[in-house]
Amino acid sequence: MSSMNFFHHQDIARRNTRLLGLLFSLAVILLVSLVALLVSFFMGGVQYQQGPGYQTSTEWALHWDVIVASAGVAMSVIGFAVLYKWVVLRPGGKVVAEHLGGRRLSPNSQDPLERKVLNVVEEMAIAANMPVPPVYMLDREPAINAFAAGYSPRDAVIGITRGCAEKLNRAQLQGVVAHEIAHILNGDMRLNIRIIAILNGILFISHAGYLLLRFGALGGGRRDGKNAALPLLGLGLLVLGAIGVLFGNIIKAAVSRQREFLADASAAQFTREPEALSGALQQIGVAQGRGKGGRSGSEIESPNADEAAHLFFGQAVNKFMSVMATHPPLEERIRRLEPSWDGKYKANPVASNEESSQNKNPQAEHRARQESFVRTLAGLAASIDLPDKVVADARDPEHAKALVLALLLSDDDATRDAQLNLLQSTLTPDQYDDVVAHVSEVKALPLEQQLPLTELMMPALKMMNAQAANNFLQLMQRLIDVDAQVSLFEWCLYQVIWRYLQGEHARKDLNIRQYKSRRRHDAQLSLSVLAHFGSPQAPEHAFEQGAEHFAMGMQLYPSDQLNFSDLSASLSRIDQWNALEKERLVKAWVGCASADGNINPIEQKLLFTLCACIGEPLPELPTL
Image (cartoon, rainbow, N blue to C red):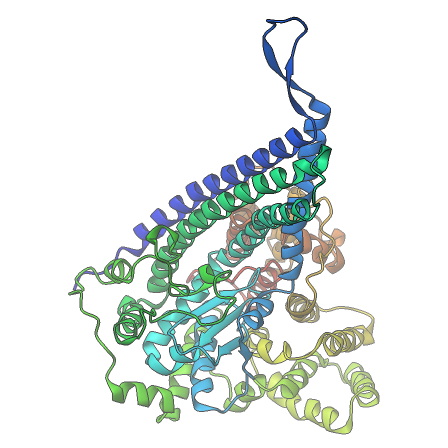
């Protein structure tokens, strides 16, 4: 059987997306210009004048002060509509998921179907070296579909329709989840939310035109002066807005189709099993053939599906014109994954579906999950399995908090006693006992596994509301401050949890002023910290290996000039870099850590934390 060339398809999809993105930007600029010109015409910025004398020629007179003012008003109004939508979606993927009718799954759910979905998402996320995202089930959606939403891995969520969970076998579900995680890793979520916000601004043009048309019509017989112009201005805006929405949706659909090709290719590369993803697409084709009333096998019933159609795995909204389709045809996607496909949709055997849905072999599933986790951690350190109880507690909202607090307890007896006294005076007796019960478990874990454990705990920790999360972070900080100093591990653990809980509850911009002008300093500082902590014997050599990835001249900061407060501020600014800049910096970090031919546990810990702080997955570390 011929296999797909996923690297070739990834390159084509990225190139096409850049071209379409440029076209989209030009279309928006042209539309805003036309709106500004139309408004200025009715405001007297463009006038048709006739000179003195009987046969004097006529000409257009341009009043640039009016034109510029009209353009400013038009851009401000459209910009406000875009900003409003951006703010509405600012809390992240959970807003989109809830808007579509999703129900958040408890990370420790024991429902067989939910457990299957949660396990698959957990496996795929950990294999991708990113924290496990929360999962939403669209209970009232029988179609086969899924989506990823959010700004970055910190606030990403995965949504799964009930039809997808019930009708796909485990391998196919893994392919679908890998596809959605590929969207997260490829930066598609931020692009998708930007498109939603911009289209809302374009749509607002039509809304404004409609309101002016209504207002002018209700003006009765007053047809002189500006009142007479209102209906005409409203009609013009209505037409321009409609045209803008039409072409905006066409370009949005074209961008979405290219990103779907890219996610398909990335998922195939990720799982090395393109047949599983192809099988999931074929089940959509099977469901479509059995459907009634022309419904697609992936069509979403939610009334809000059209706005978020480009987020989904399959075509969520039926489009009569192929140019408006947000997803490529099933046949084309399947043939890219399986070039030798015979063109026939093959339904899953009933027994396979039942076994997958009912989870008849939990021991085998658990073993597979643990093996997947071990393989992931093998890239970080020794392949040591996590105890079953630790894995189970990491999924429980209360036990997960106890695990974090237990990780912060010091090895120094006096400091630990002071920390325990603080916990005993702050927590309930049951909560305190829970922390104490987990101390021996977490302290027995190798150092290189203690931080990656937070990847498993993240969905459970994100179950806290905003106030509870803030109280928990304050308690963590008080535990750290007991001995009046911050260790590397304490800083790493707090940074990871703080930033991911920020992504869940309040997307505050964390000290990002002048981030462009300080890029050199921020890259230099992060590399210096990694070099001094990871290679204390030869920090200069390690720093130089990382600095090679930057054209700008960089110098190692002395160790006495480094502090965690400055590093935290620098990482907040780095978080605002674009994807290519971040990718280069992550490669520099890895180059610095591997300069001596060995990535030690301290370097692993720092790499994990640095990547988490800027919303990037930890790359596969080189085998040295």
